[in-house]
Image (spheres, helix red, strand yellow):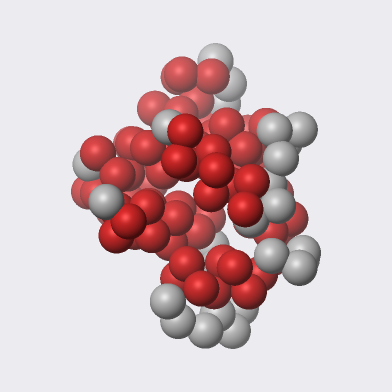
Length: 108
């Protein structure tokens, strides 16, 4: 999980956001089971909500907040570099998790 936290910091996402922890868990889960991206609302978000004793709606909203924070910052170029392609619009929550997990898996 240490490398995941490093990447989040590189994108300007700080621990002051609840979504920071939700994204970190989501990336970790997807790295271990990529099929979770296919069922983000039915498997990924419920698992994160269970781990953090919150609701699926809170998880989804807080992850979207983190994505917006990154997109609206000077770190968007870093996110594009991690994605490996130009990003012409703000990524969805699942795209954001996919970008980060793919980037971290490619580093292994």
